[in-house]
Length: 176
Image 1 (cartoon, rainbow, N blue to C red):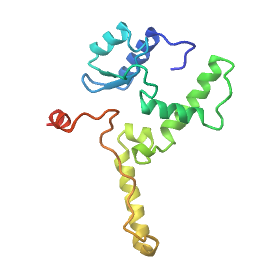
Image 2: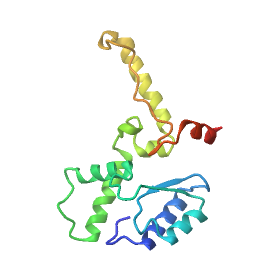
Image 3: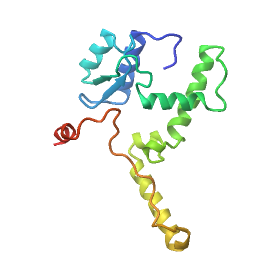
Image 4: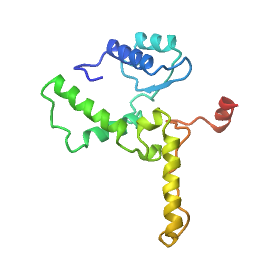
């Protein structure tokens, strides 16, 4: 969502629309946010509780509260075509629409094994990973001298990602 201001009402609408659009089930989602007034507001808190969404918040006065969001904004701002300023809300929305299309469908992310968010979200990453492994095996079979140390493997794909990983005994009780 691109808006001229931040508010609890806009945050509530964004979260509700996104959770509905993505068919998120109760107790399936954890949202990590800062302690800003919009995300910490009662309407947002009640909405998330009603939808069975778990929330986590940063420590107060912590500027790097969500490394995923921080990374996303850095990629956005350092794109060569990012303008010095937007002259209208429509221009900002247009730019962001193009950026998000590229970011989700084309940009390969190192944190998810050089996959696109689109492929991960839609369950296509395992097939892509398998195809990459086949190509690397073929290359190794045809020219093993090019691979000095070992048989090449595609980048690993994480199964779980944490901002603050719980203690191991807590993690084990959550999965077992």
